[in-house]
Length: 78
Image (cartoon, rainbow, N blue to C red):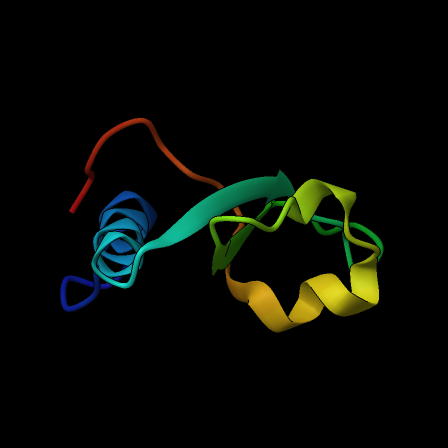
């Protein structure tokens, strides 16, 4: 990680704060690896309160996708 960038944890906190201001929800789901050998990671979705993102098929779910993390710590590591 560069000294000039945020860690994944801080980036997620920023995404959650923006979603709260916009009255939206943030949902974390396990990602799917796109290339063999890469970890699945974590997909981050920001969506309206009334939408159950887990119940949506992949194609409609894509419009709510905002971030992907290879790994996400439980605290800041900036």
